[in-house]
Image (cartoon, rainbow, N blue to C red; front, side):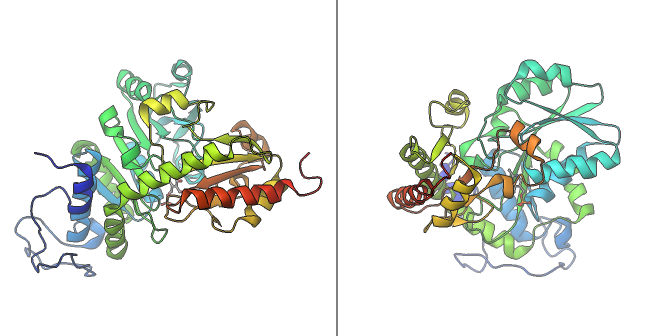
Length: 390
Ligand SMILES: Cc1ncc(COP(=O)(O)O)c(C=O)c1O
């Protein structure tokens, strides 16, 4: 009988314990190369070629976790994204993308892929009726994110897969915000599932990593692209990622519960115009999220009346830290117009629903009541500021 996910997260997919020394926790191999023929079962050779034992074992665990034939580890989420797109696309190709992408991905499209003659067309991934008009004969890929940053919009994911199948496109999804526990993109039919493993998969804000998961045939060219570009994950980060994964289920459950509790507790606070969480019935993607990502992880967004109030609230927080990134055990808060979306001009920010008063929150695993109290006192302090409420 196949074991439950929580057991596989701790012990991996295989029966028994494979570490020959008997150590409960396996060693970290810092060797850059291996003696030829040292393992009769697999051709271990050289770290950059992705065939070191620690990484291969971790890739097998992640493939099992996500229901793919194969997983590939990368030195960062961006290394996973860039290697995937460079492996699939040729000069002269085009891709459809969701209009709300992570800034680094947007920069890759605007600055690098465009330079090599690859054009992209942004669409509203929640409106399938608009996609056909954006399609060109040279289109090869539809690229979306599972939950948009920071407003947590959920695309019409089944429709993305159906559209790709109908038009011969590869479907690629960055599921970082949802984590492999919140969403099963490969079960929905996506060709490639990507994660910044820096975030919830590793979970402790202490490493940078990425992963791509899919079927062998789809991942083979991405694997050789990784070998050439050199974006493989180093052994120490692989060790930490493997350790973090063991507790993903516990962390994800707590973070999801904390985010929903915080969202519910802060709705109606006078310092806020809006609380944005897909678990709240008024969220535009609520019904789709209930169907596709019922546990949506630790993210939420809070819209204050002004940038000054948002800054004042940030400064008054005592438990949550003002810092970029997400998915760690500690609650982190950032102002997207000054961090993740600082590269966009004001008109582009507004078109995406971002304004200076918006705060993005990544809930950690702290006690929910303590978090609620911390945010309440910070928002109270912000709304008490003279003249800032207008
Ligand atoms: C949704 C998403 N995808 C990809 C990335 C890039 O990941 P990394 O920083 O590990 O390269 C990030 C980073 O914040 C992200 O939020």
